[in-house]
Image (tube, rainbow, N blue to C red; front, side, top):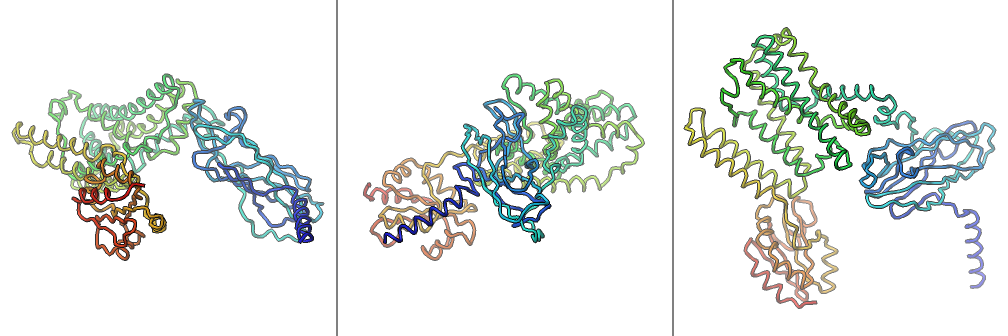
Length: 589
């Protein structure tokens, strides 16, 4: 035995000296770093690379730029070697922007999974053999609330030099440095005129984005109508429409000034779509626009305001201004990429320059309409009004519904269902508004119907769109193993079988499991509360409902008590008293 122990010690000592404490992977609690060779072996005079791979946990990042990183704590990779190779400059991936609330500054960061490439060239006179390369990793790794400067140690990679190396199948492709540049880099490189030109092009591009389709029929009809007017009136209406577009971007510029001056933050375009409330509102707005396109309801304006007589009072200009404003609202989200770059540059400049840049986006969007309305000959080429306009308008209604469905799909589960229910109610209210009265109906009838429609829409909003209350019960997802473990430990188990499409299941939640006395009993008796989702046929809970508990449908609650072989099954929506009675019988732990 002594000899065996001595032999093991010798083997471990040799292995330790052979490895020299070198590692090919670094793991700390917030990031894992590893290294990979492009080729298994390389030949003298060839070029290759190492890929250093980072996998940072969610909400953690590395600083990308030495110019903006606080204290110069940006990510650095420093290879050192005695091998006959020469390393070039590291090739970093494209960074993304991050607003540091503590520093009140826009920074460039790397996050998630990314790779940094270390290209190298092998000397033409290199001897064959295996050589070690040590890679030092430096830089802070940060979250929203803290930054760390860990001692990463050194990665170790082995480069095998073989004169007969085939080098035919690379493990990865090394990007060229130009592929890693972001749009913001080019903005900073080319300066003011490039950024303003980019902003102008961004505005032009908004006119062909799908988001502007909802107002295309209205814009086309307005332009067709303008063709009948004299040149001065047509031009004035067109400029008013353009002013509405620019007005929207002027509001954004004003908001940017307020945020920077009074709150020390910046306007990040696109963040509004991270808000479920905003997404739900946009989806419902598009459903309403679709119904307008289908002719379910209309918006009539008194002739004294609309100026439909064409008396030249100029009252139609308010409609043109509002339509331009609406076109800008609906079109800008689709141009997120280029708009974000323009906004990023703008907000890093003095307020005067940033305001000009944001307004330039609006001018770019408005220019085509200004050109079109200033040339009556172009307006004459537009097809005459007819059935095609109505069909076009209705077709766009279906496009609107498709966009609304996409927005609904982006909502969280419970909120998604409630928003869709409310969309049906809102559609009914709009149908009441437009279909239950006609143009010549008595004013009293119009008032009654429309007040009822508006009241029903508001009341429905409180019912379906109010923020959901936090569940009183700590529900666990269905897992057969967890339930079996609880049973072996003589812990009572309550399984609530439910489904997203089950309306009565939601009634059970509201009438039974939202009661404080039920929730308190479950907690007091140490009951494992399990939510068994049977929305899809192949879900484990669906299979268990049928094969284990022999129940045909939901809702049903199954109570498994210690020492009892037969489960207690509670069906329907009125079993609150029975459930309370069964829970009270359980001995408290």
